[in-house]
Length: 376
Image 1 (cartoon, rainbow, N blue to C red):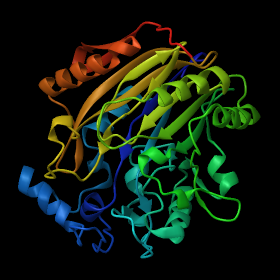
Image 2 (image 1 turned 30 degrees about the horizontal axis):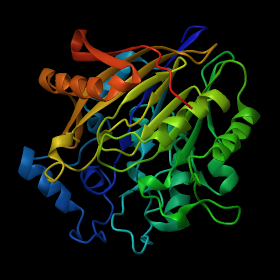
Image 3 (image 1 turned 180 degrees about the vertical axis):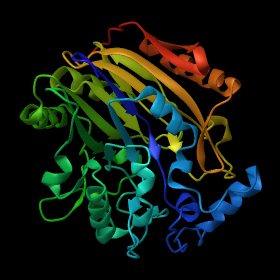
């Protein structure tokens, strides 16, 4: 990082539970409590039936595959993910919930292998294995010196993760979840009970509450990120409420980057008043290989986002993206054809937001934008 710019690595869901956990060096007991699957090793079998054998155990760095070389080459100043799993040995699964993601704490080096600085935890899987599971998740991240935001008792869940980048520059990360992403109402953090930082709604009152929180911690030279788990897993639609909320966070709350996730595929990108809005980042890693039903969305394809941002103004200077594909439970470079498909999707979905991407050298994508005026 120079004195006036920083590069931040962002991605969507990083889902290392279930099948991924089973091929790591320290798998959890495979029993799961799903309507159709009772053994998480079934997800390994499905992947191997589709694409061939997955080496076992898969090393911590090996899971990252080509992404590790990309991170080393790009050398971002800060690296963050949406960690969509509990990291725990708890057997206290959340009754009545259809899916339960869990990674064994001894597999936490999969995160340090890529130098992850921040894990957003406000999502619909971090409490899958109950309050003991959440407590162990937080304990494990702390042990491995990975900052987190979005979970714990209310004060802890609402507090940002703060990463110093040298000098006066810092990245301040707030993590939120919306009910539209499938987070149970009972998961909301309170003063007396741990949980996730659940947004009551996407109203002006909520924006003002977040504004107060940001104002208390954001200093000159800070870049503030609102990492939001919202919307369904599938579908490209961006609601008017999501757009208004994102704009309000930028206009009124001092947020510089809106980092949206939950969709298992990429969605539209917007640059509003010079600030980056990612409405849906897709998955960087999941265990969905061989699972049918939503093939048209190409959930196997993802993006590594490298945002260059002014530390003086928080404005986006450039956004470069590396197309990826999940195969053999690792992150691989996407083919030129798949990169072109992702570009076409981003151009189609970004048209109404004034954004488009071009394919740059090395099969990477680069964002171009114009300012679009929206009615309040």
